[in-house]
Length: 282
Image 1 (cartoon, rainbow, N blue to C red):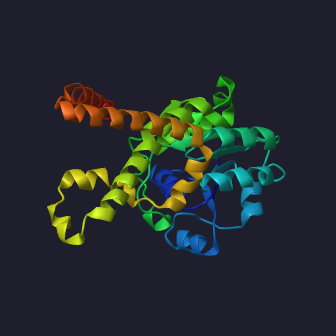
Image 2 (image 1 turned 90 degrees about the vertical axis):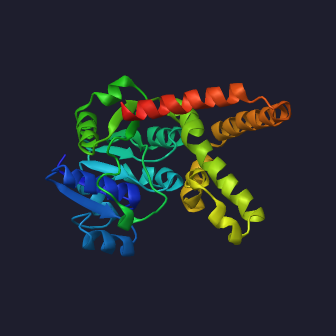
């Protein structure tokens, strides 16, 4: 792959470009975003050129869709008349089932292979892009068939992902959405709800009383709804199930609180927290 077109040169798209450059990718990196973002990306050296949507797609060996989820779904049909038959289209959307289905319905001339880097920050935009963002993170690919991973373009994409320092994992699109509803979307909503609740009752004069635990628990609450609204809209069913289960556990915790015995809850929580941290360091 000699030419990569990144559609959506923000935090994820910009970080993908910077990570490849830092790893020695020698080809051209084209960017497609708003005129202001394209100028910023060019000034920062994140992309080499900003030739416009049609030219970028026509020239690219890899089209990397790093826009919001609903924008990815919207733009997929317009790619097919322009893309090279030997090119690969991939995306970095945080939900997969609707994107993969739209690609299956829309893309005929080239291959599509869905993806999701499990990386991010609370800050947005190309100026927040970081060459180390994917380092040590999981990067999920969501093929509809094992053969999707064996084509020449797909193998090259996997090489590029490894160049960013990420670790590859493979999940079917539906399974991906169910799992990330619990491991990513639920934590975001819990952090947001906690901060929103406290904002109604805690006056600023008490802020110095807060310890590092509250800072940790509300870190995700810094995220913008603009980032999350498409994710919530396209994974509603799985998120609803995750919230329902969590509410059940909160209700049980409330009952157990009266008995002064939360041993089981604390033990299972500590075990899970320890295991997930161990997995992240292995």
